[in-house]
Image 1 (cartoon, one colour):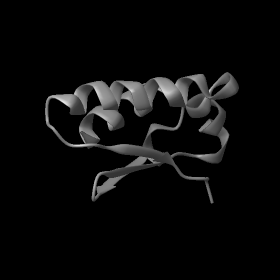
Image 2 (tube, one colour):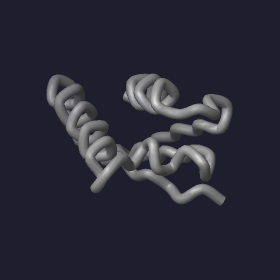
Image 3 (cartoon, one colour):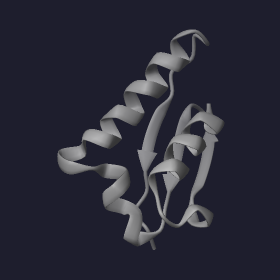
Image 4 (tube, one colour):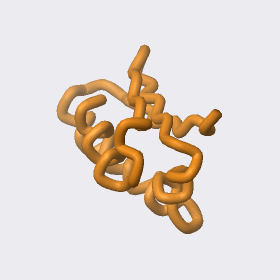
Length: 74
């Protein structure tokens, strides 16, 4: 599932090397460059919700729940 999120996020951002996606216990954490945070969240959180919906649909076949968290850039 992390590969799917990694692909989606890297296609959305400008700084592709700054993308970090980790997964532990069903929680997928996404970290991007500070300048790309708006591109991941989107207007009123629409892109973030879309990413979460895609992960939810893809994980349905795996019978496992995943949560996508977008971490603030440091």
